[in-house]
Every structure is written in C-alpha cells, then in structure tokens.
Image 1: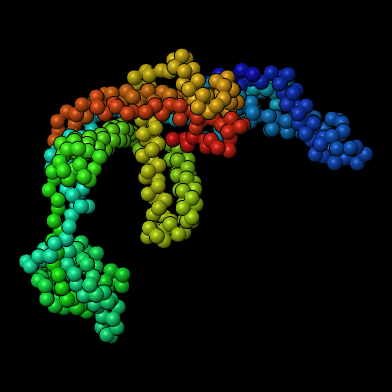
Image 2: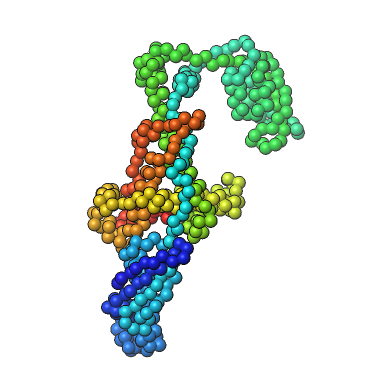
Length: 466
C-alpha cells in the first residue's frame, strides 16, 4: 500500500491511497471466511460454505467484493493516516477512484485537519504576574496568627469592639412569639458575622449589663425578621503573648524569633512563587490564544472538546456521589447555561492548542529523532513496557503523528515562556530565574496519555484531544 497527501482548499488534505491487488485478495478472503461463519445455508455447516455459494446468495462476485471493500477501507485508511502522519479532526469523505470491480484499488480520502492559524504579534507578548517578594508586614501577620493560637482571654471593663469576645444570653422570637434561638452564656467574637450582621452592630460599644433589642433576619431562616434580645454579661479581650525567643522556643521547633520569621518568610515565598509560576504559564498561553481569531477555529474541534469536558464532569460528579441534576440544583444553574460556560472554556482551550501549533510552525520548532527516542524511552520506562512495544502501539493506533505534534507543542510552550515579557503589578520587569526552579517535564505524560498497551488499557486513560 502507498499513500500520498495533497493540500486542498481550507484546512483539508486529499489522501490518495493505492492498495495492491494482493492486499485486496487478502481482504476478500477474510470477508469470505467471516460470511461463511455467519451465513446459514442448508446443506453446509457453519464455516464450510463455499465462496461460489456465498457469491450467489449475495448477488454475485461484485457484491461480495463490494462488501469486502466496505469492511477493509477503514483499515486501509487508518494505515495511510499512520504512514503519512496526517492528524485528522473529523471523519473522512472516501471516494474509490479505481479497482471497484477488479484488480488493485485506489481511493481518495478528503480529510479535515487542524488549520495553521495566524498569531500576529506573538513575539511581543507581555503578561503581568504577581510578585513573589515577601514584605515584613506579611511575615508579621503570619506570626500574629501563630500568636493568636496561644492568646488568652482577659476580662475588661471597657466597651466592646471588634475582635473582643463577649459572653451573652442570646434569644430570638418570631412575630408570633415562638422562640427559635435560645443560647445562654454564649461566647461570641464581635465582628465575626456568624449570627447576623445586626448583632455585631449592636455589640460594638456595648458594656457588661447592657440589654440589646433589635429586629433582624437569621441566615438559617431566610428573610424572616426575628425579634432579638441580648444580655451582655462579659467583655473579654484576647491578649497575645509577646513575640520573644522564649515564646518561640516553647511553642515551635525553632529557638529564636529570627529563625521563626525566616521560616515563615520562606514558606510565604514558596507559595507566592508557585502562584507566580502558574500565572506565568496560564497567562502566557492565554495571551497567545487571544491572538487567534474565533472565525479560524473549526467547530468540530470545539464540539469535540465540549464533549470531553461534559464527559469528564460527569465522571468527577460520580466520584463525589452526585449526578448532573443534583449538581445543577446545588450550583443554581440550568443545563443551557452550564453548556454555554463549558463551550466558552472549550473554545479557549482549542484556541490555545492551535496557537501553540502555529507558534511551532512560525519558529520552525522541530522534534529531532534523538529527542523523540529519548522521550519515548522515558515514557516506556514509566509505563513499564519496552520502547519497541510502545512504538508498535503508537503505530498500530495511528498516533505517531499526534505524539510528535504534542512534542512540538511542548517546545512551542517552552519558547513562549522563554520569550514572553514578564512584569509585576507595578510594571517592573520580573526575572524568570527563580520561576524556573521546580518546573516539571510533562512530555512523558503526553506520551503515556497517547497510547494504551493491552496490559494497561484499563488503567491508562486516553489523552484528551486538546
């Protein structure tokens, strides 16, 4: 079998395939054996029906050949796709151009492929990422939170203010006089808003012995207004321990306040670096995707992505013991609104995919065979198969072109992250040296998601098209 490709209008390719007569004869024999097992003919055992009898029952040799071609063409097409490394995004339109009645067979497959979209201005992209600098105020705030856990409540005679803890008798009745809240000696933090905002307003400035009366709704009872009666019995202030070396040594694994502050600063910076790194990646991809005109995005790709997202959402809900109807009820959404949200996300994901592929083309980023083999070996090791077995599976599934394309996309992403201009919230240039620390290599994951070996088919999910 031989296959060639030719670009035609739009984002389509004509795949021209020539199949030798010997391969057609093999396909015919396979069809004869299959029909002989399935067709029941009086006087013949299953599997023993002669070819001439089958031809007669099907209307002649031409009908039998037509059936053989109908069953064999999908396999010939798949082999041609693998051989030419074409990446179809929709079912092909197949037209037999020769050999329909005898001899070798030739057919054309009109295949829609991903378009190469325009990404004007990609070389000058700029994104704003959060700074990972840690201020003394942030460290102070975290140390204060640690001090809070060791704070003691001390009774005071002054009026209550936010952060104070007050002991109150709290009662609330409906307009009919039914008491629905009754809590004596209730310890409440002023300003916490856990009962009703009106309670905090009344408690601010209150003193022990004050009786407060007001009307307000209770969150658990909707908009119904209740009549509240509150007796303020005590006002207590939380006194925090002094941040000394002694307190640190007694309440942490550190010996000095300086050591504790250094650890707090390091932890805060680690979190900020992670946030900045994620923003660097996501905002860079988003900025590149925004360069793609919506009109250039094939609907078939958006529809495929949308189906994947709906399918994955269903699985995630199942894992949580929910169905789609329950999810919609809890989130207050309707099916049409949810699909509209998912379609927006799907369009954004497809634009990002097309933009990275276009960037790889624009910068002529290629995957050398040595690079591919190295990544193949890494992935095979992680999947506990041999590189040869993994390559055979990729070939058999017609995924070789897709995997190489994913590796080019990975190179395009690296180029993008290396070249996008980074600034912080104040517009100052941001260095990417620290951001580089901890970056992972996702290419092995891409390969593992692109193929299922027979031994791992149940546990290795197929990679989503995006």
